[in-house]
Length: 199
Image (cartoon, rainbow, N blue to C red):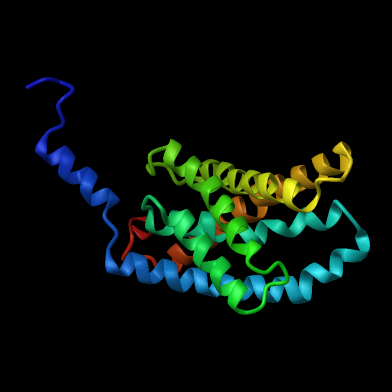
């Protein structure tokens, strides 16, 4: 047999790695719905408090909006988890009355895709704080790539750069490191025993 030919056990292991179980789907969906409610509350009660500080400083807290894209993959460790979680959270946010309307869905898609690319790059095999940090930054890059042309096309280059930099940094720290710490705390409670992340 060629060294490049996958064995039956290797193929089986790969299929098992990619296969979503019912519990994976349910937990990610519940997690995403919870984050969708958090998004709504964050928009209504926290985001408005930073408005007086002006741009770009209010964007230092946008990492909360991309947390599902990091937390879900850290828990279930399945391809597509980042995109699935971020999109469900965005849908819930829209249904609850997001001030950005249906554009929230597009924003959720690019944010989830940004984190998905990072986890995909490491083949969904590495879930430490460094990967979480980079995945959060990836989600922040997706956020910036969406926000700058949609909401700030007439802003000066310095202000555009400032907004993008804060979105990326916020994604890396709040969603990346914050998400990793959240999952670690959940693991210590024993709540994640049904998942590879809890073993």
